[in-house]
Length: 74
View 1 (cartoon, one colour):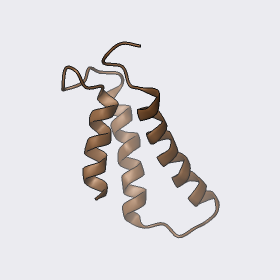
View 2: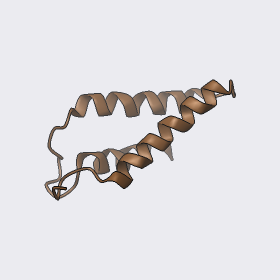
View 3: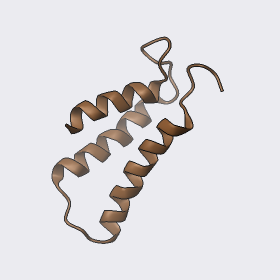
């Protein structure tokens, strides 16, 4: 793995978040608009990144997004 590659742990955080959202939809649980918007933003950001380099030279792109998404979620 390259130093700037996304780690398995970071990928797993995103995967678990999206999997849990999908499971809640499948169970027909009530969802807040905020939760749906959050997951939609995650998917849109991942699609936009398309493997481009990180804005911070030593920080994988997914790590940057995780920090950003965490700030939005709070």
